[in-house]
Image (cartoon, rainbow, N blue to C red; front, side):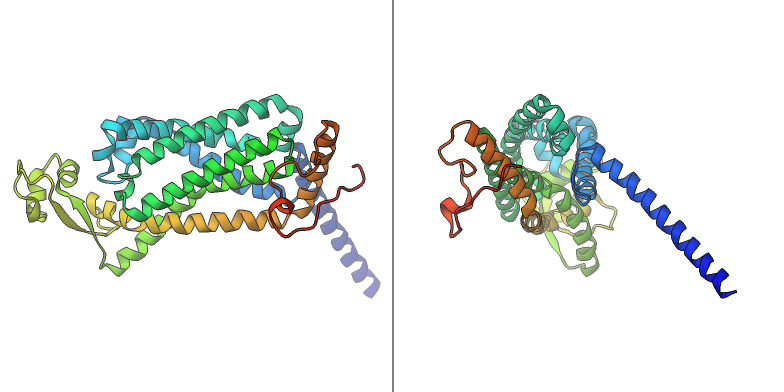
Length: 344
C-alpha cells in the first residue's frame, strides 16, 4: 500500500514538472522570437513598452483638436489652447510626441535591431526629430497646461532638458560606436518621456485624496469660467459673484473654485486636476529617474557585453581609445581603467 502511494506521488510530481517544463518552453520561445537573451527582459518590455504603446494609441484621437481634444481636455484648458501660439504649441506637441511614442517601442526589440538595422537607424533619427519638435510644443503651452503654475512649468522644463540631453548623448554615443552608452541613454530617455503616463495615474489618485480632505481651493479666471459655462452665463454670476454679471468688463478677474473631483461640475473637476498635477509630475519624474538608474545598475553584464562589442568595432575602425571613445565614467570619475575581455 505504501509503495503504491509513493508511486502515485511520484507520478503527480512528474506530471507537474512536465507541465512546468512545457510552460517554460513556450515562454522561452516567446522571448527568444523577439530576440531577447534574458528571460527577465521580456516581462519588463511588455510592461513598460506596452504602457508607452497603449498610452500613445489611446491618445491618438486627441489629434482632433476641435473635437475630441476640446471635449477631453482639463476644464478651462481649451480656453487658452484653442488659439494663438498655444494652438500651434499643442498641435506640434501632440502631432510629434504621439508618433514618437508609437515608433519608440520598436527600437527596443532586439530582433529588429539585429535583422533590420536600416529600419532601426531611420526610425531612431525620426524619433529624435519628433521628440525635439514635441519639446518645443510643450514649452509653448506649459504656461497654460493644467493651470500652468510654477511647479508645473519647472517640471516640464526639466523634463524637456533631460529628454533633449538624453537624445543628444544617445546620438553621440552611437556615432562613436559606444553601444553600451547608447543603450543606457536611450533607456533613460524612454523612461523620462514615460513620466507623463505615471503623472496621469498619480494625478487621478491624488485628486481622490484631496477631494476627501475637501479643503483645497484653486483660482480660475472669470473668462475661463464663462467659457466653460458658455451655454449658461447666469450660472457664473450666481455661483461666482466676483466675476460680475454676463457681459461684465471684469475679464481679468478671478474666482475661487473648490477642488472636488467627485462634484460632477466641470470647474471643480478641473480645479482638482490643476491642484495635483504639479506635485504628480515631480513625483513621477523622481520615480522614473531613480527607477531607470536602478535597472541600469542591476544589469552590469549586459553593459559589459555591449562595451566589449564596442571595443572590437572601435578597434577595427582605428579609434585611439577603443572601448572608451565617449564620456565613459573613467574619463570623469574615480574609476579604474576599463580593460577588454577576451574576444567574444
